[in-house]
Length: 375
Ligand code: SF4
Image 1 (cartoon, protein in one colour):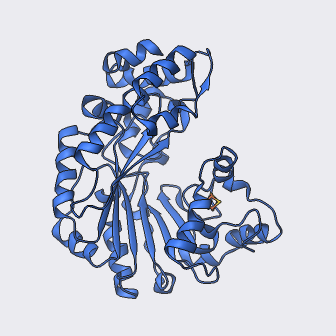
Image 2: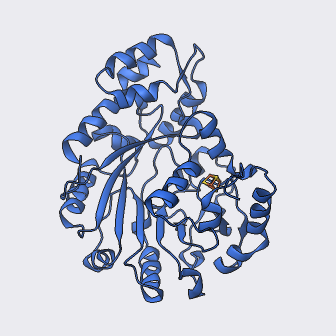
């Protein structure tokens, strides 16, 4: 099975679920396009026809159409989640038994969020809904409204028996709701947390209280991925609703107060909005968070934006300006190697940014004058 072209450990060991007003959708991971089951319990999804259909497809030697994101990464010589999960299970966790599962949960709490980041949308942020309504007054937004009562509660303890990793990710800000606490407490009751790694993608706008720090201290590892795309006023523009100084203070608080079993990463989504200024982010990271207080490295991870702000091409003079600006930043030069050189205008970007600026009474061109001139 493992040598089949569609094989991926996530299909056999992980289950991803996301609650929203349309119900609960399941898949093997958050990269999976669509879902393999919907509006059933997690036990039914894990044992049900939807997941079995994917397993049977892999067994016949076929690729899984919903896994297109991973296949595309691999075609572009990038490391896909599918490939990373092989390293994770075989080398890092050393648990490659595909008959025992689920061992991992990917949990999105839905779209409850206090920010309306430029790169986001109402599907992933409840704070985005009112601006979306202003941009598209004729569209129905009721299905974006987040209800806590629709968040999944796991009824059958047996599904948690083998859990060794939990990933709380966006949309939504996981630390705003107590759903993550309830889930960790439940796992603690069923099997304990001593061998469980827990990952959070957080916008760093909120701190946690002592009871959460105490719960986290029972886990094998807590990894916080801080979503930071830029610094200062440009950060506040892109991560609309956030205050840069508060976020920096919160990160310092986490640095000083996390239990011993933690690691940090900085996750940057690179796009039209921030590419020109990423050298400043690299400097900020090197100065402020190169490691945690025990000296464990804090990685700065670059993730390419999708949608209207995904930067696909620049003209040759823009590319040489960027190469010159980043000449002492090899990590950024490697991002530039992904760009196509073309004189095509950037219509889609300008239309998207102008739409948002209009409803927020902001202005990309005055926030980023040098880069706007280059574009
Ligand atoms: S191949 Fe990629 S998208 Fe498909 S299940 Fe694996 S990690 Fe998820």
